[in-house]
Length: 262
Image (cartoon, rainbow, N blue to C red; front, side):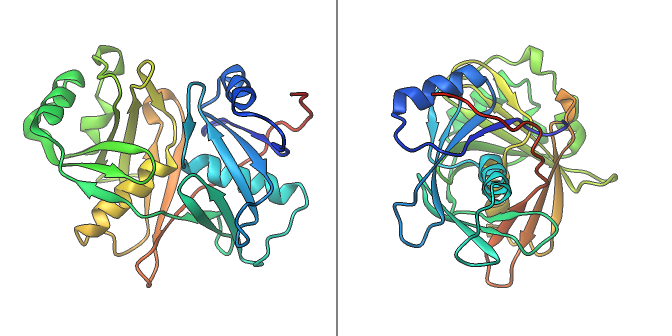
């Protein structure tokens, strides 16, 4: 119970969009996924991913959590070592060969952040501009306004209660640790409906990893901590591969099983 909650509906066949959204709103979890028969011949299944307020084309922890539930339900992937999930960004591979399931991070488009957005984010989050090392807009399905700070303490001392929300933005902060079991600290603030901090965000970590890889800085596996300031113990494993791809992994646990009538 130290991670990020997810509801997985194993049989989403026949449910319309309104029903899926209504159930996701009712669970009030970070995301709710619905597993459907594959519409791509290469996929093992399709998934739809909903927050309490909208559908997402891709999200990381729902990808890993759904894969765990799909396997636990007795299913077998077409390829023994790999699950292929079809979602809004297309096919996403989940590698089953490591200590934790890990999805292959989908491509990330990296673009410059406007000076106006940068200033608004720094002002809204009460960030010291002198402590901002790098910034960019990252798009891997979700769109992230990403900032790298000097040190993890810049994130850990940030008071979320003093943030002025910037409507319509999702802001991701990353900074290096100098000690402990994690190499980086990440915080994500979603500001679509209201200000909300996410305990663990696989898609953000995937985008950040691609951003750092483009700078030549992802040459070995590393661990990211997230959720620290909201009493969670998130650990995201970033694993570069020789072919240039990046896998994002993490432990998943099934806590509740049952039936729901929709």
